[in-house]
Length: 189
Image (cartoon, rainbow, N blue to C red):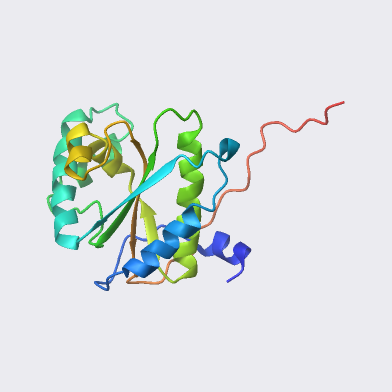
């Protein structure tokens, strides 16, 4: 698969089969993730892999319960309140693999660098026929000190990208993208 093809075809996947992604494949994706550029080559990322569809569904329920009391009518997530209140809504969409990308402490560019690693991981997953989706809802819950402690993650590591992985149940539909919005273009002397 050519890079341009991957860039134009990769979409967030929210329906998965029950097929389990192998450990070897996940390790290959992590290797692709760490090929991302980072400021001053600091490579400030660290990864956690959480596996098991049933366990992730329990964490989905806990994450929804954690989020709901914090969402007021004027909160940016208010449009998702009904979905989050639905007991059948699984924020991990039934997949059995969640990759967490953390920024190590004391790195001024860690967040951006981890975003680059996440993009590499998602493009590599697409190239292997896997689906992925960045699950922003999970960040609030999984960044809590008690959740990090439960998974053996150092308290001072900051969760940047919770990404689900799995085999898509359906082909991804093409989505029209807006053209680049250029707010300035100046030829400087």
